[in-house]
Length: 199
Image 1: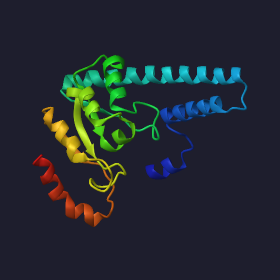
Image 2: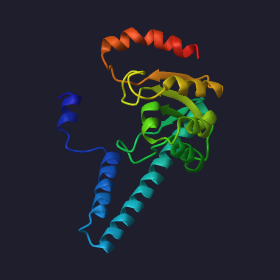
Image 3: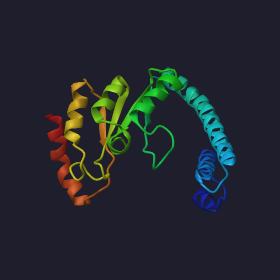
Image 4: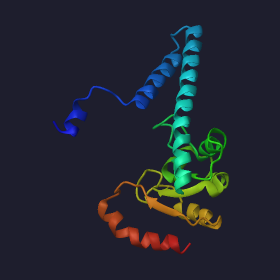
């Protein structure tokens, strides 16, 4: 039997994902108005304890990875993901706080800043750029609707100019859909990149 067939038939869910789904269900129970108040408080306590335990376990694992990366001269980038996709590290500010206070601010941990997620979660682009400082190590480029830059409402040129003014010399890459069309993306990418280089 092929491994892909085994995966399809496997009835188990990965532990961390299962843990987060369970915690989400607990939080939903706490939010139900028909549940008595004391039970709702109990659910909130369970949710909080589970989230604390989740972080303790994950941070211990991440610290081992950080120690190894530091020895090898590798930079690990953490990416903030919007609240609709995860309950962890939703903004640049939350990610900086986690690196500083949760991980002890190791030199080998930086931030991958995704402009699509930042559009949803960050208070302001300039503020986020200042907060991240030299922790900013990579940028994902996508417009506010995850389309190719210029087809949403994010002023990516202004953002990249602010980043460039900080002395940023790392990479940026596209993480957008092939929208409004694959042809548009293929035809416009070269000119768009050249324009950004000239900022």
